[in-house]
Length: 248
Image (spheres, helix red, strand yellow):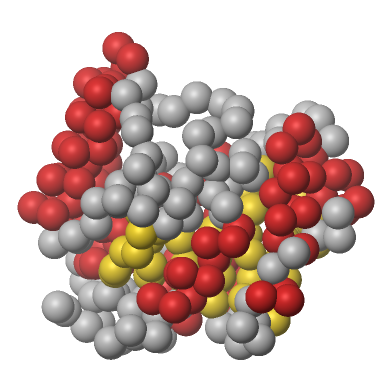
């Protein structure tokens, strides 16, 4: 089974080496998976690309900064073009332990095969603690997606995800750039894809700041609300060829 790990990276030279080192340790315990890694350098101004190459990863350089949505879609297109069985998105800041990848894979073997697996930090396994404002923001996005798109995941802003074959076809054609994590869940459900979650461990972010923080939370939630509703409505009836709609 071929798996492409996609790391969208923007100025991540400080943390990227550690992440790639953990990924290199996976094959011996990865249950026969054939794992390849691509770092999508999203117009970084630092040595992100050089660090990736020095650590044995493939590098896909974008000519300018497209944001995480553009970087992720570039990686997903590569996975589809090269006929990988699955693609796994992992952050370059060290927040997502690569050792948890197996849990995402295992979830595809339980019951009806899912098209998209979201790793959730909100579980007894993780004991993840976040700020009140972030919890409030996550609660609202979770509720919004449940009402609008019938998505039932506890961690809709998680970027630790596994994409199956139908997801690769769908997101090759359309992937959101503004708020990619929640909007992509709405698109997936509008196309009839099966979205599930599985508990994973996550670390505190080692760099950057969350969009759901401080006084910007209310403004962020307002923008996400509008984006999710409009994205879902646009996606209804616009399923790309090759993704047979399946409502559940």
